[in-house]
Length: 76
Length: 210
Image: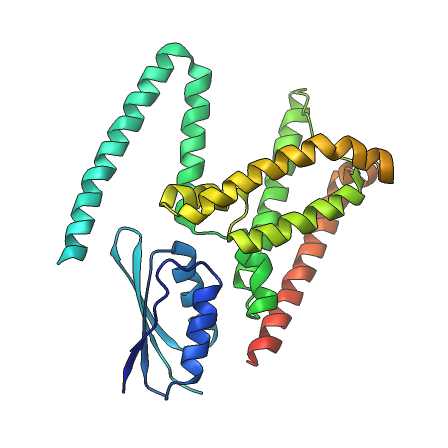
């Protein structure tokens, strides 16, 4: 199990999600992708997308307007 | 620990802003109750919009880009609720003989051209008009630029509307309840919305292969 992270700071939807999708396809099952964003809709969008794709996602608002996301790749 | 301190410092700001807003409302109420109500309604609308994290752009863009239709369906639900709410308001107004001024605008080529321009613009800017204003409040510099574009575009559109109408002509705007009556219109609209809902669900299932 490896932890990956990509820089999506300051990016607007839908770019973070497209980047996450790209990164995810190069990862192994069980790997974790760590994302941090200050864009409320981006965070929401990634959570909804991950749930629709049946990945495990944890969302935490670590400070006012900053979201920390951990996405586990559960299947290919 | 810098993250935790960010939380605390924000809390102080929140209390400060609440105090400031309350004082502003009290001050305004000395001048005009009407203005105070508008200000209070505007502030609460903005608050709800920001907290809901609802994104019209995402609702219209994600089905095509990502194959997701959750927000699209939420948007359809929103339309359904506002149709019912609007019907209630109109019914209440007609019971009390209050005239309603409706914004039923004529359609034409300019509607399509304007819609396309706005659609391209909102995907690039990452926000519709309210979305842009919310994100300016959240502190995004890019949206300030987009807001400038929105203002310029609106003024240009408003100024050139006459030319568009003269060149391409227009069709009169249709207010469905005037044509069919209220009950058939409501039934028709709910049927169309649920049809779109089913279509959106089918699209997501097909795209995500569930």
